[in-house]
Amino acid sequence: MDVKKEKYKEVKLRGIRKTIAEHMVRSARENAVIMESRTADVTELIKLHEQKKKEKIAEDILIPSINDLVLKATALSLKEHPNLNATFENEMIRIFEDININMAVALPNGLITPVIRNVDQLSIWDICKMTKEATEKVKTGMFDMDDITGGTFTVTNVGMLKIEVATAIINYPQVGILTIGTIVPRLERINGDIADRLKIFLSITVDHRIIDGYPAAMFLNTICDILEKPELLWE
Image 1 (cartoon, one colour):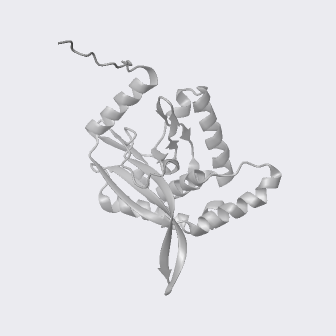
Image 2 (tube, one colour):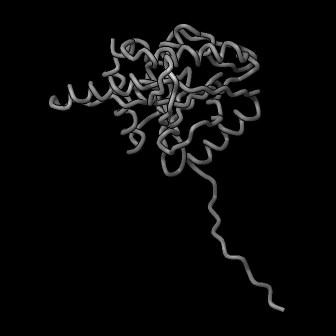
Image 3 (tube, one colour):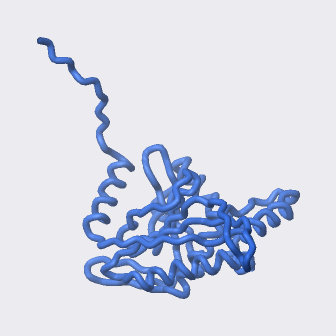
């Protein structure tokens, strides 16, 4: 009896994909991760965002994305919770003064995380400009090591894929990563009335060796508080 041969294609792991695989395995092996998640009410944030778009569209100015706004909120939260703006390597915790956030950019062969530096000191318009420049560099392959190293925290976004909650792998040797989920409409009772609200899902994954659940939750709560007071982001 003839044995039918299975048809398949083998692809050798190499280049960026191999580097990512090695990096992720090391992170998964060395970190003791926990994940916490909650939603933030971004109804007013979306309204203000749409208003800013209308104001600037005639000026042909780049309009900040929701991702840019969350980056800013994350940086402001890291100022209040500096223990998450840190790395852990060779039994040494290093807490940084500068807030340099890696921003995950998806490519066909993996994720690259360019760094936006001193995010807490940037206006939302500067963040918008820098994230677009960083994304373009990565997608065209015109980046160098300085563009992707020196980050102190990472933000990744799965919202465009309609994912609500995800446990992201920490960008070793950092101690935390924030995942931005999708925005969903919800009915909510406010002062006895039913109202349409918009909610965004946010998840924080931390290295439990360094960051306990309570400070991780407080960090996440601060981000949500800022997003729910959107005027803070445009100052």
